[in-house]
Image 1 (cartoon, rainbow, N blue to C red):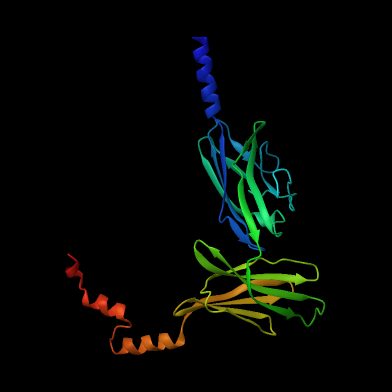
Image 2 (image 1 turned 180 degrees about the vertical axis):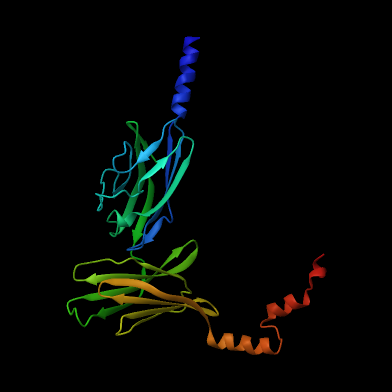
Length: 271
């Protein structure tokens, strides 16, 4: 009987633990692209889990590059998860950009996992791997600054296949110094048509790409010596196609052969 009671106690004690998980938005990121991660934790213990300044527990992320033991040092001292408290039986979800705490701009394969230390026990998530790649080059340009003659900002338009679609990205790096700005995801593109990159003297950087056979995506970025931000992003119809559609709409005509087929098939004919 005592053996049975001890086995039951061991089973219950083993079940009362923390479940931690780390999920990445993608398995491949372009150099400079924010590495978005989601942290999930379920508190299956009978105790509070408290993480933050002056609290008994801790939470952090471990990242290695090129091998299991080549751990990268964090570049910031603040909590990547932020302070939190999880009651018994409750769960927690947080998101963070790993590249803001670790230097992951070099090309290669990385491994990341979430670690929570509670009650002297270390709880680890499974390691998640991701690759950092430069992308496939398409266009590039250089921006010069009047008040900072030594600063040169390099713009590189690259593409990469993600989720079975071709995606376009804008990489931004400063020379000298090697500062890497956040890579901007520009959206889907048709590889048969090269994108357009324009750098205006006032710091307005415009990228136009063909997203579909009849539409473009236009992205405007403001690039100043100490800041880079997306100012505008919109989708534009091809002028010739859109004009034709407007004329046809005025006369109440279908815009394509497919529209004609849809027009002939009234809803009751499908029953």
